[in-house]
Amino acid sequence: MPVPAREALVTIDTRHPEGRIDDDVYGHFLESAFFGNIEGGVFDEGSPLSIDEPGLLQGVRADVLELCRDLAPGPIRWPGGNFTSAYHWEDGVGPRESRPRRLELAWGGLESNRFGTDEFLAWCEAVGAEPYLVHSCRDVDEAVRWVEYTNAAQETALTARRARNGRAEPWKVKYWGVGNEVYGPWQMGHRPAEEYAAAAREHARFMRLVDPDIRLIGVGIPWQQEQWTRPLLRRAGHLLDHLSLHLYGAGTHLWTGDDYDDIVAQSLYFEREMTAYSQLVTALSAEAGLERPPALALDEWNMRHLEPAAWPDPQPGDDGGIAPRELPDAPPADRPGPVRVNRWSPRTVGDLLFYAGVFHAIHRTAGLPAPVSMANPVNLVNANGVIVARPGGAVRSAIYHVWHLYRHHLGRTVLPSRVDGPARSAAVRLGDNRGPDGRLLTAPMTVPYIDVSATRADDGSVRVAVVNRHRDETVRVRIVLDGTAGDTPASARVRTLGADDPHAVNTLADPDAVTVRDLGQVEASDGTWAAGPHSVTVLAF
Image (cartoon, rainbow, N blue to C red; front, side):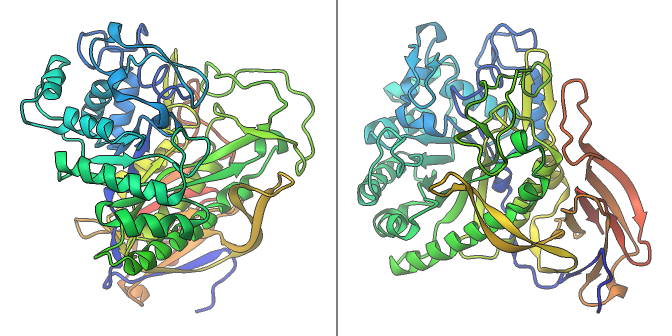
């Protein structure tokens, strides 16, 4: 069937599902001592917006907690991130006044330890999320005792200590990370592949002796993947449930003024990397004689907003973005010199389309032997996060609505789909990867304007998420179920996410500049539905 300009034909097969989306892909991430994730975000002692009643939640921001609860989040990863490599969990338990204040070696600040294991686990319980704790993988005994402290039911010195600290029964923490980015020299405890494989095996073995039901995430790698992953799977693969993968996109609009098209296209790079690593893990698992390959955990991912490092350091603005500062003239777009990540840059409509595209890519891995079955963006609160907290209140960032929309209004069974529609050729950024001259690397790709994730919900309805990457134009979407237009209902419940401006952001003063609109039941027009420019639309049949 020929496809007219600015119309996309979407064919969906409801009879042959490809796999099931794990709810854990809608997880999140918090890092201690990191740009307002915890102190000033989740936890803000002395704030009138914080819980004042004694207990493990004392000092927790009530407004942030409610916004997190409404997400119905998947697993939340803590205490990091890079912070993990030098962290000792015993610094963060017991009476707060007795906890040591430490130099924080990952980000160069101070860690008060006033928000520790019990506070985090109580907060996850209040939010309704599974906690995901990450150990440094530098000390087997410390890791084992952490599992004992949180999960053991027997009467031991550590479980008695837990009870004194406010929790008599086990916390039953399910997910545990065995190290973080151990391949990197920026980590305390950095080591080569064979050494990490041996350490991961020992940690995993003895952690499982304390609690056989825990699920373990080993350290995967985004480069030199075969050299790192082969020894890990050979020595420890039978003890690991997931391998991690960390991917970051790169935006330059803070000094170039506009890179919307570059941002929304980078989900294609993420899909390429996830699929390639899944295939490699599957092949190396078979080589190692494993019964099944570990799944993938995309437990760090984000769109980084870069800026020239010569600019004055950004500070958090009271309204949710960057505080005013005097900036010099912008450098040339392709030669900014050294750059850094602006941790206070607010999320835009372009960002939310990128995130939706990454979710579609994750959904499409559901039928692979090593699917992406967990994902945790950096960050949940502040620091380019899903929720923005300031002393005057908290607000849903633009990207919050992607998690909420997909978590609550998409199905979990993946249906095969194909899109025949308009596209453009582009040099797509390979995330935040740079060449020797500092320029962001690219590769030629075809970027479809329409990207679709088709699912079946547990009530039997078909839910179709449609991303329209086109900056300016509406694309009419013609959906054909099971090969014939006659099988496609004539109306759909429609929800759409976006804003008039592709660079729009949410602020405390204008919290709904970017939001979801429920259009109710919408009749098809000549068999098509409208996907507005720079928008995400979910249709329920």
